Image (tube, rainbow, N blue to C red):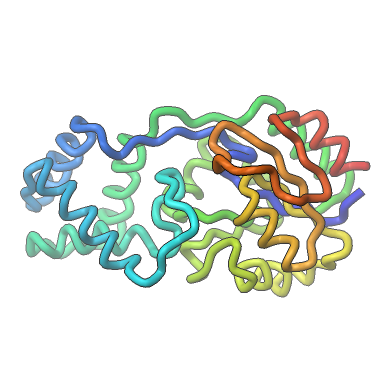
Length: 243
């Protein structure tokens, strides 16, 4: 049994599909901005969003560009604040957050837990293990999606890249979590669906690793992990983590 289980979120516990290129998304988002005096044409807004994100991530290119992670190397709130500023609108934090969340809802086509996720987390918790989240993600999206899915209470700590200035597979991101919670590496395991960000990053940090391939895993050969599952199997994951 592992004393500490560190989970990735999207593609590991949560099945998600996002699409930021739909015309109706930008039409509705432009309408939302106009409610607060920031008047954009839909295509103009999309181009401005892409320009701002490219500028903010310049020189900080990530290994992955998954839309569900939404530029985890920056704080997405800064992007939406810049879009208001370009239209000479001073937007306070609640409006910026709600704008970002409206964008996320519009872009999300599918969001659900993998079958057996809650049962697995409950079993791991009942076995006495600590459970942590280490995710390349945006707080204003992920914190609320976890709440909506009803899984926040299972975690003893939640680490999101947007709040720490680094992301997987950067060793610093792992080390921050390990240090804050005084986690013993020999008794800890990282569970994820990304062979580079989750598995290679965790292995370099001295953690045990469990890789599970899902539909949104990067298209590449399975990594060298302690455990490799070629498809989602929460029963098998439960057995591995609880011994």
